Image (cartoon, rainbow over all chains, first blue to last red; front, side, top):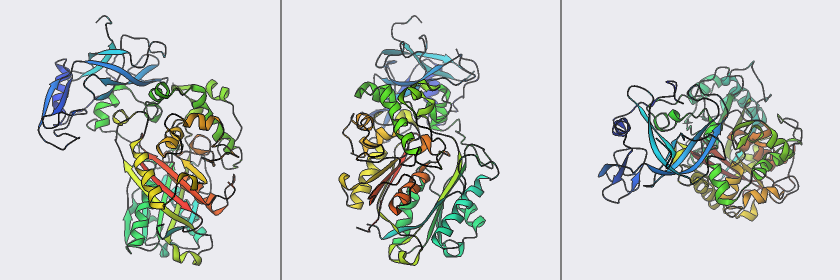
Length: 138
Length: 378
């Protein structure tokens, strides 16, 4: 599915750990050690209570499908219509992603279906976190 | 009430496809029309606000020497925020007469910058790698969640476009004026499931401008004043994936509630409503987040023709971004229609339009501004 034509993320000092995490096939989240709030995207402070006391931890990689659109317009990195999806991680945060190992149709993409993370190498330095239906063959 | 009124308002002479004017000249064309509407020249203006172009560029280009400048740029509702900031500036004496301009060569792209998303930005890192190709694939993302949680059907989403086309059919300046059916909408080209072409806004060229001053000066101007009764603004997130609730806009709620409280009005006082409609789900979110409908009931409210011509709450009476025009930053056109309705000069004029509420959105549910206009200062 993936060709080297996706728009690539450029990590910043605040997000470097997240992208190093995906390279190591870990989905890293942050959690406030004062108020226990888990959040995403990465930043070195808690957006709920403003504490700078935060820790990084590995998420389970389990999620459910929150919403999506199926883009009909061509994109050089995708073959035919493709879903741009929002998934709710088991730990709470929501993120944008693509759904792989699954037909890109409304029938196959059922909201709230269980998903699990996959990591897809899109450049030398970057693996993107994508999601597949839970239980699908790796 | 704020003590400030709109005394000049106009759109560009042309709307739609204007390849012979640069984006900056679209601003200027609208500004000159608004100055003519108010009987003023640039020498009478001492405050300027704009988005899309820099206020420095416009002040110089138009020959304005401002004592107050606002370049707030939060997307298509920036002009609502400019109105709000201008009210405060005029009330506090920082300036007396504010010009707010919009111009956008959205279709022809003449003299227009792009909207780059830096690869190191939050959007560049956490959204763009997954293949969004512009607003039709981002602004639309929350709606399947809304449809599942509240039982909205594809037919109900399509009805938003059908009703707005009814309004546009009464407006000679609307880009699309032929009436359409739910089937027409559902049979139009799929853009990004579940959104069909007719559920997505137009892409056109145009502009608009407003002139504000103290309401107690309003008798000096040729047009009847349109009083600004209340204002609100907020922002939520630069990336749609992170909106707190996929079925509601926090910024709509904050801006709308503040503006209504500021104006001292209830829902029953609102005769006319504008809700920025870049896509068909926005009026549904707006009706609920403003409190005109209970959660999950706005689609039925629209289906039952309450916002259509002759309905209890006329909404998007110019035809909206879906049928009137949408240059990219549509908020100015929503404001213009509110002003026309209060003046009594709209092509599809609402009877007894004494209070108009105008809700804007910026980015993809990223920001909001809300203005309440009235015929009387209240």
